[in-house]
Image (cartoon, rainbow, N blue to C red; front, side, top):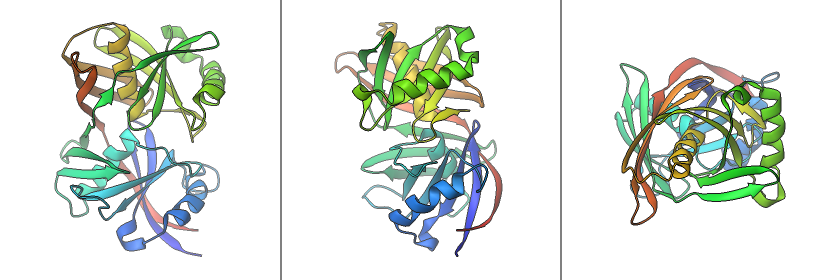
Length: 275
């Protein structure tokens, strides 16, 4: 039995267990094995996922971010998780301006320690794709992990049991598997604001926030409006608070650039857990 020092963190209600694996030196196989136990809300700490900070694995990165969903699966990128890890890094020897890698991609973070606010700059995103699954008209966007956006009326966002049922069906639909997709239910409230509920793959339920989902939904909103507006900034209202997504749209190259996710990040508590 091993006592693991951990930090519980949250970003807009998206909650995570963070460990410093530079010291602990767990293998990825070990992390995959104990993540479901640690993330269990009945038998563990309780979290949407586990994040490990590791020494940089590629050139140009200050450190590497390892992220696993609550079930131990690979989420790809986690936006709010990366913001929490950047805050963690800024209090554990790293500068407020950081670069880190998730798999082969480099991300940039800016940490405001005074206000517990973090912004993360993402790589470019290709033009979304319109798809249809059964009666659902969806927009597919890849923001470091797989997402689809489903635009709904405002009152539908409050019918959480229906969102879970629909989200599960779409997440597991043959046309999206493998590896499956996160499902975003999006409501436009005005030209530069949206409400969002996300059914997250690997959590297999709604979460209070999803950073990559916020980016995907903002880009899908811009794409669906057929706008050629170059500079875009969206307020994304999620159950756990507010996030901001900004980006530029290059119509000539059909690509989204300068993508930035900003919002709150906080420490909740720290401790040790026996695994």
